[in-house]
Image (cartoon, rainbow, N blue to C red):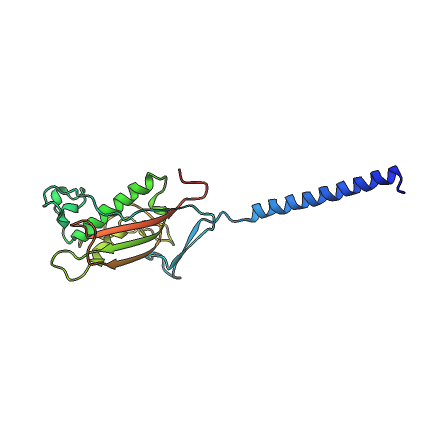
Length: 223
């Protein structure tokens, strides 16, 4: 039979061992928390490009909160044009619906749409810099056989991918055929993107519809 003192020593040893095990587990968990990544997202870019238009892909952290917009088209801001016409969806920055030299209706509608997307994101505590993926649907302008990808890309550069990744300098971007100017929104983000031509969009007069996915930065959560 074990003596009382032996039992006490055995109990003390067991308690010490258990405490050491718990401490080790806690330490391992703490180390795991310390070494775990707060990774949110990262654009994968083609090597050697200082200002690519889009990413080859975007890696997104497993615990990252993602916000997805619906498809967003332009607002009817040009009252001088017939209702439901493509020209009626020109952004209000073009006074009286008069476009600068070389600016296409698709380009003007694209600017309109991207401003609305910016507003949509800001209402959720996000910004254009948080966009990781974009899907673009383009319809043909009346009298054109093809969608105006060139005009759309000019509108896109007004809000995305207009910062040199090597120097951090803001790049001048074209609007129509005029001399390049400072972009409407300085933004270094390079989302993934597809743009395709469709037979028609849900609202008469729309030439552009866009939807985006954005990630909440580290420390931010959906409201």
